Every structure is written in structure tokens, then in C-alpha cells.
Length: 114
Length: 111
Image (cartoon, rainbow over all chains, first blue to last red; front, side, top):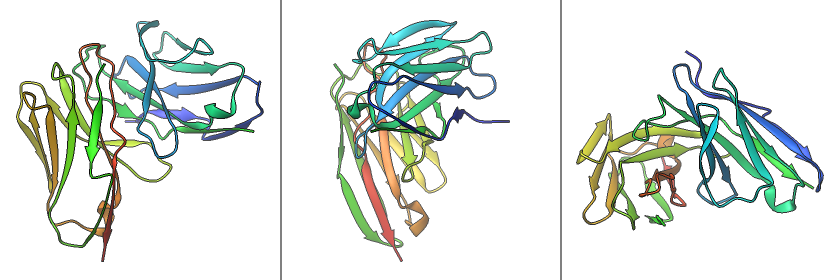
């Protein structure tokens, strides 16, 4: 049983560019959440997708957008990259859209903006 | 808005010690609390999930307790080993259901 997978592993972009990160949830899970983790900090919640809809959103600007596909996989898009967007981006999945279910995390995508 | 604090921020202990890591949260209307382990530059590994109706959970040498009324959770690690060296994070969703993480406790267990 594959766990949560993310791609790519590492990414280097230039300020002002756009980036797309991808996540496949654990088998049997239908809810995907995205987090940004800066160095030395805890993960910050970006948004959560369930039934292809954005369900909850944290305190992130509209430059951060997402999508969930019918197979439950998800993408995170970031436009007009800033140096401060450099971070580890984590995807987490959970089952059946229920808030009480355990979250499982992927290995993350390390984004560096130069 | 939920705020989560973890104490201590860092801990260095000799192998074999029993450890207590603390997590406090401001909004007690949580539906669960989850403890994670994170190795440097890696994703998070779930250690224990405590539902709001539970007081504790155990897995091997790990035991986590939850006291909603006081807004506290503790993670107890028995007989620590060098392989336990990592950052330990707790996450407590508040009334808005948005998961809020602490900054973590960085643990080093030396032989």
C-alpha cells in the first residue's frame, strides 16, 4: 500500500515564476491538505481539498491556489513567486473527509526561490 | 484562533533516559490531537492520535496523554535511544478545524 507521494522532491525557481507541486494521497483517502514549513518552524496550513472543492483555507494569499482531481490527487500552484516562498511544502491525506481522521504526510517538496 | 506551544524547544539527553515533551493549546474545542516525528528535511511521521474523548494513547515506548480542560498534552518516551533523535511536533485543530502545529521539540539522544 503506497503512502502519500509528492513530486518533485526538489525544485529551484526564480522570483516571479510560477510553480506546480503534486500530491497523491494514501490509498483509501479522499481528503488532501497542503502545508508550508519554513526552516525551524512548524507546518502552516495552506488549504484542504475534499470532493474536488477547497474546504478550508489558512492565512495565505490568493497566489496560492489548488486543485483536486476525481482520483483524489491534488496540485498546489503558486504564482508570482517571492523569496519568502522558499520552504518545504507538505501534503497530507486523510480518510472520508471526516475531521477526526488521522493525517498521513508525504515526504515533501523542497522549493527554493532565487 | 488556535495557538500551540511546545516546551522545551530543544532537548539533549543521554541514552536510556525517560523523557516528557509538552504541548499546550489555547482552544480546548479540539476533536483530536496528533503527535508527529520529523527527521531533518523529511516529511512528518504520525506517532499517536488521541481523539477528544480519549485521555491517552500508547504505542511501544511512546505514551501520549490529553487534558482538554487544561489545554495540555504530553508525549512520554521511555528508555530513549539514539534513533529517537528527531523533531517532535504536536498538532491540535481548534474550533475552525484548521490543524495548528507547534514549532516542535528538537530531541538529541546521545550514546
